[in-house]
Each structure stands twice: as structure tokens, then as C-alpha cells.
Length: 125
View: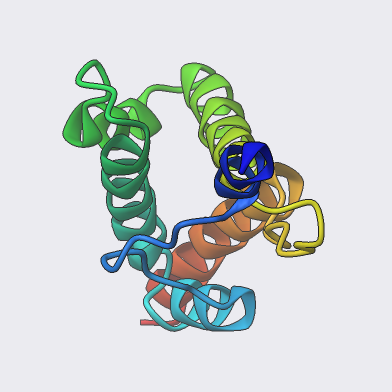
């Protein structure tokens, strides 16, 4: 009977609203929408992190608008991926290997590449 409480603490409860966004699809959508999906992705995942952590201080729209502030956006990108990593570490079982493949470095490269593609398409017009 004493082991039943230990078993419950190791059980991972999946919330029904959690969305799984494959990395390849995120990258494809960022490229196809000339970086617009990047902003939606930051807003949506921050909103989901807020629901997951039940932290009322997390403001999805504020987080989204912070991406438009030069230099500060780098700190926000880092905070975003750190929050994802923390939630995965807290909610995952020791057997889970589902770490996000979209690291801050890759995200920054995609962001810059999207800006380049926008400029390139404007130059070709």
C-alpha cells in the first residue's frame, strides 16, 4: 500500500489540450509563410505553457510583442525555450525522450532566414 503513492508520483498525466507540433512542420510553416507562423507559434506555445504551469504572470500577447524589440527579443527567445525545457523536465517520465528539436539557435536562424526571404521577395517584385 505504501508503494501506491510512489507509483502515482511517477505517473505522467497528459492534458487533453496539449498540441504536438512536429519540428519539421514548424520549420516548413515558418518558411512557407515568410516568418509569420513564427509569431503565431510563439504566442500559441506561450499560451499553452501558461496553461500548463498555471502561471498567471505569463502574458502571451506581451511575449509576442517583445519579439519586435531588438536585442530584448533574444532574451525572450531564450526564456521561451527554457520554459519549454522546464515543463518537459517536470512533466515527463524518466523514460521519455521527447526533447524539442527546435533549439533557440535553430529558431534564430529561421527567424533571420525568414527576414531574408521577405527582403528577397520584395527585391524581386
